[in-house]
Image (spheres, rainbow over the protein chains, first blue to last red):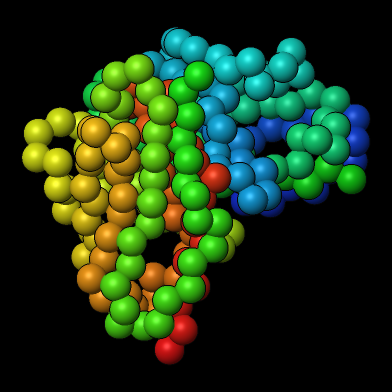
Length: 113
Length: 112
């Protein structure tokens, strides 16, 4: 049973560039979540999907952020015109269905220089 | 506003000693409660969860937690700590299982 996978694991980019991260959930998990974790803090909720439908977005998700889950399987998180404040670990999680626990991937660490 | 507090930023224990990590929450209703562990540079691993029923829940790696409604607490315990338990521990709560709110974490250091 493979867990949640995320790619890339590390990304260094220059300010103003666009970046895209990918998350592959556990097979048959229909809910998928994105969180952001900055140094010394706990993860903060960004958004989540039920299959391909994006059900909720946090106010943390500015207009420069967009997430998709086009076929209800993998998901992508894109950040446009990156800023230094976007430097963080981006975590993806999945759950089997409503009312079940979330399982997290290893995260993608973004550094904006 | 809903919030989660982990009062201890850093805890140091000797290997073999008992451990208790504190978690307090502020919510209008009884939330779903979780403890996760994170090793350096890694994602989060679920240790245990409380949804309803028995207020003492058992988890993986010998951990347990007790939900106390009157104290709005969900403290994590382990009777005998191993060196491999050194990591960061996060308490998380949610009105449902979707949008979780995490505490700021407690870093556990274990001395031989």
